[in-house]
Image (cartoon, rainbow, N blue to C red; front, side, top):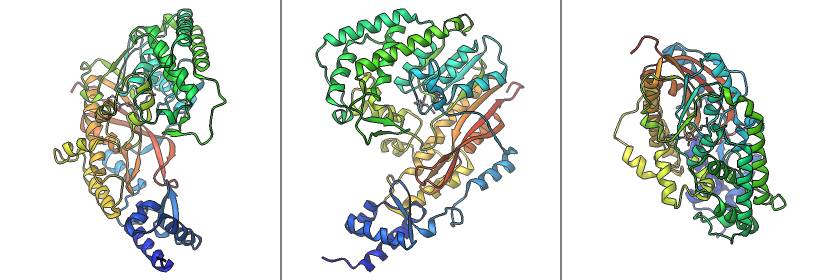
Amino acid sequence: MAVDPDELSSAIRDALGESGALGATVLQLARRIDGSPGGIRAVLGSLRDRGDVLRIGRGLWVLRDYERLDGHRDFVDPAEFVERFRSEQGVALGVYRGPITFRANEALPVHRWWPYVQGYSAEFVDGVLDAQELGRGATVLDPFAGSGTTLVEARRHGARAWGTELLAPAVLAARVKTHLELDPLRLERAAATVLARARDRRVGLLPFLRETERQFAPSALEELTRLRDALPREGTPIADALRLTFGRILIPSSRLHRSPCLGYDRRSRSDGPGPFDRFASAIVDVAEDLRTLGPERPKLGPPATVEARDAREGSWPDGTVDLAVTSPPYVNGMDYVMNYKVDLAWLGYARSYADLAALRAREVACDNLPRTETRAFLGTRGAPDPWLAELLPRIRENVRRKGTYRRDDMHAVVHRYFADLLPVLAGVRRALRPGGRCVVVVGDSLLAGTYVPGDLLLARLAERVGLGIVAVEVARSRRSGQRRSFELRETVVTLERARSAG
Ligand SMILES: C[S@@+](CC[C@H](N)C(=O)[O-])C[C@H]1O[C@@H](n2cnc3c(N)ncnc32)[C@H](O)[C@@H]1O
């Protein structure tokens, strides 16, 4: 049956009007107005040429009227929150200067052993440690330790480093990277033994991930299974370093990349070195760094403690921490489990999809949080902050208006995210000595067409649990994944436990 282009065009306009600032993809439009994706694409093309619609990123289309979010009835823009924060908290936004992202670490000894896109720069941590002028033997905590950037630098400053982290490959990275006493020669010999054993082994079983054969070329899979099966069990410093190095070569040996989310490469990478060669050269890097850092050993702080534990438990001993430096997941920012599922599966930390789901339920909420979790959570408590009490219904209403958003309980995910942060902040507040500071790197978000000032909300929650806000400084701007033209920021929030006990 022929479809009248004018009718289709007005149906598309109506559907986009309903979706408002959130926009809709071709497939969502096709479902909504029962049209063919091809026909809809063609009409969208001509509407775009006439300047009536535009693409805002991730395949989303909006009516021209929604090109800018500000000016729309229920949109509260970032500047308005900054102003409210200044009048309610008495703190104006400042500027942080210096590299903040992990990228700078990729060329640095030790930090390069396990590149973690979600980490921050060692230079940032150094700057914070220097500014606090901590004496030797001070204690530094990172409740969301990730790959251990804070812990490595704290040890190198002579401090006692203490971290908690849930993502097992990151825990492994933090443990290996803080154990700088490792003998490089013993490591090289152990790696040579692993490689010799791997060359003699048969090809092993693939991990449980359904897409493994799409992720890797057959020759890479053969070498990786043989290498994995030749590795010693986790638990000694040498075994851990060998296992981390195996983890480090997984993505470079695959057809995947992280930028920062895990995705497939457009071009094939079949001509690169194989896993055996990659493993051998990664070990050379680790051994070289251990030799370079050898002279620093006498100045290192005591051995670091890296606990594979939920930061929400927050059970660090009271009043023992001089400084906390950390970065939690950002609101709706990243599904760490999805992004590190290859590492989790190949290193044996997850043996099924149920294992991945169980881990995701314990991590600070992201937008892939199992629905059972939001269902269990909804209605059990009120929003922990008045700003949040305003924002949550707005997110809910935007999602309802759009009708086809990827999950209709997005407001509950955001609610749980902040409810997850609250006990961590309270735990850090208790753990800090009076006068101790907590420096947090965090970002804001654009969610379902609603701006969520995650950084300012975190500062407000911190104030609620008894931490004073010392400074809120913008370190860089980021682009929203939902709407490329919308500018977000990454912020350094400095908090302090009051000097008088209490
Ligand atoms: C932004 S990353 C931290 C990166 C770190 N600063 C670095 O440089 O490597 C946030 C980390 O929080 C961890 N995380 C999320 N929920 C957690 C929880 N409930 N307990 C402990 N760690 C958690 C994630 O696994 C992730 O590694």
